[in-house]
Length: 300
Image: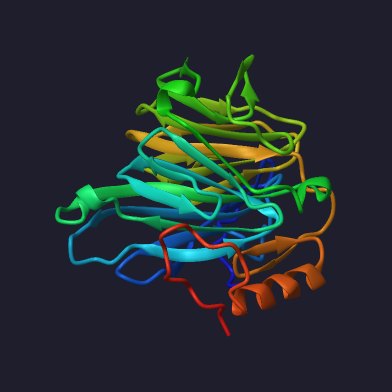
């Protein structure tokens, strides 16, 4: 797991880390910016993984389809600022996700899904910008029944901030609650901020971090340019001052109830469970996505 770029924050600033991405080529011209896990920070609350996609222009000649692949022991969260992705999975879900909406897929004991360019976009260029998170499941839910939930942008609570807006994607904030059910106390919110208006990220009794997706903020006397992951110290309040328009995501929640192991697309409290999942995928005994025959092989 490569080390990320870690900016040292001034003493007393309330910031634990300011982390930069390492790049991962997913093939077909799509490179993502991986923010979690890194050596400095393996998790933020129950979140064990974060990739930022773009912003990029997807051109017709690019093959950005993510072929069928398996998951266990986690929930995937997909959220877009621009573009469109078509989700299919082995429990029969077929759903296009568009900006401001959210897909929450619980893998539990095992699910297979694909993420592809929708047919109507295959012959034209379009912007793609968004994030995918993995949320580790509590021990009691690791082997739960797979499921899929989609919420449109209009279903998610929005409210004003000083100089901006907040869309509540997961969890509860300021007396509002997202309609998306989660397996543990979890928070995810999009921040749309205007130039020069300070925004306080309040202290909390759970882990929190801010993924600066686009733009520049001043924090603790430093100018930080996207993409960066800003991790406050436990119990500290941090103030972000946008220098121009900013788009960011606030996320976190209760830490997982014990250590989790990660291998490829598998998350589990048990190494032996991951070995069984590896064998099952090699032998292609996971459930299949209706109508799809391709698959991503288990990495060596």
